[in-house]
Length: 292
Ligand SMILES: Nc1nc2c(ncn2[C@@H]2O[C@H](COP(=O)(O)OP(=O)(O)OP(=O)(O)O)[C@@H](O)[C@H]2O)c(=O)[nH]1
Ligand SMILES: [Mg+2]
Image (cartoon, rainbow, N blue to C red; front, side):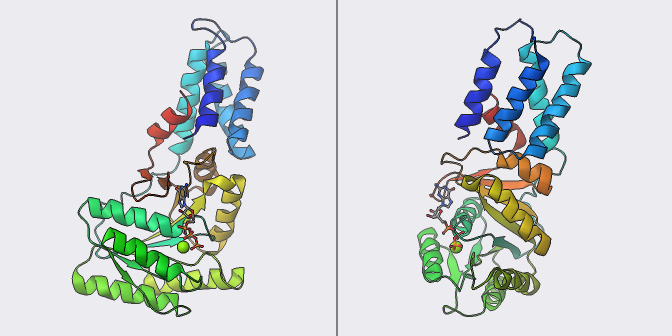
């Protein structure tokens, strides 16, 4: 994971042996900007990071070692990630059932993520039910039913084409009647038109009143992930983001763009197709992964 960005930073910081000073500040900074851009960090965020870094370098005087630049870079990224509060701990909630709605464009990994989150909750001793609220895509109900049965988790479903909000509503009633802790609501990623999709999401939100709305974004599409989220955000409020497919050659910089531009925390990272391929996002872990 994050091999590209990690190797580039590693090469940059290896260039000068320990103890030697950097000679061209501007060169180091433009290299860092490029590494960030190549890792799918958007231009504004990359600039913001290098400007802050520059201020730290300038402040510490003219003679500066590469080792210190690295520490400053880590510090800067930590500041960027710390500008918004981290995502809520979904294990530590006071409402029952706690309803989580998963949104996103088709194929980003919503349904797979739901199965992983269900697995995570189950492993932590929580009771879960799934709502098969993607009633639009052929095969979606079957897909989530199979995942549910493999996990040993109940799936509330209606027939294909039925009202997604009604499915969510029933799943919540089911949870209330059976003392179930969490309802995870799936949703369609595509409908006849984008307007239909957005209207449907709004309706599910109105009816299910989710305690947490999670936007699922595919890290493989780089910059577009951010653009997609922005479109959604203007229409439907969401609380946090799950970034999927980080096990592929996705470059991982989207994390910084999401936090800096969308001002939303990253809740989980998806790192594969299996139930256990889910990592709870942590800023220090991320920084250590991208800067060796
Ligand atoms: N490698 C990898 N594949 C993933 C990950 N998350 C999801 N996928 C795959 O991406 C594809 C789409 O995943 P789904 O969970 O069906 O996506 P969705 O958002 O529910 O798609 P729609 O229901 O069509 O809107 C599947 O083949 C998943 O196995 C991940 O973290 N890593
Ligand atoms: Mg799906």
